[in-house]
Image 1: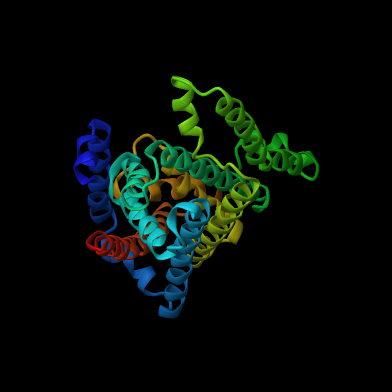
Image 2: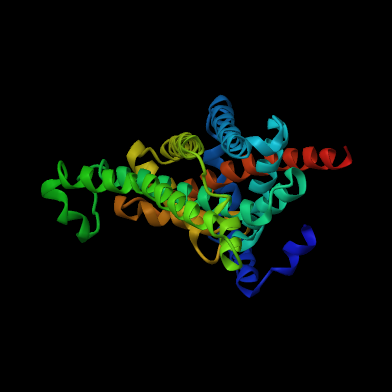
Length: 323
């Protein structure tokens, strides 16, 4: 698997590595890493432990999403699914340009014998739910931030009717996943009746999408729980580092998480993640240095949780290989 991943590294992924190295160098030259880390180490140790524990909890919830989705394939081995999820998350952080995404269907194929196309379509479904939930929470944050900040001009189109239009728009947006599920289930049923040639291939791909109503609801519920805990935890950290409201901090960390959809993503998110937070905080007219320091520390806490848990997951998978 490691060989297949290396073969896919392209120029854009190498550019992502350059971004990460440039970011680390820029921080050192501009502010100095010692100055950047001082506010983080100034926080109570118990607070940091609580935040790290909550981030680990989100990984467990993600594993539950994977476990319930492939329950018929894994024979009640939640520990194995947790190890797969942690390892996948580690690759996602370490490899550039989201190359680590390819590790999930490969890991599922190797350890659970899930068809690659089925694993890929399940991954696409999970990422659709992740993006939808993240954008929904970001929209909610936009409409509850203090009115005194300088928001983009398009926002004021909704200002006079925020009590009516905004909830309707957000409500309609929230209902997109059920609509997608109904459409894909109907299409999958039509194909299964006369599958041949490319239709059979498409049917294999669609087989990774939720086939039962229970699968859909569980995957959606686990996704919401994951992102609520993750974003609120990171917003809690950012709010402590910058002394800003929870809504503003939620908008900031949403900006960092949304950088995951960029075509160029630096390894570990170094440079891109912090830039996303700072960009989302621009309307709040914060001191740039303070915002960058807080964003860098928020990312470091997230990366540390992913790195430590990912190494544990990888070691567990090596043990599973020997068995």
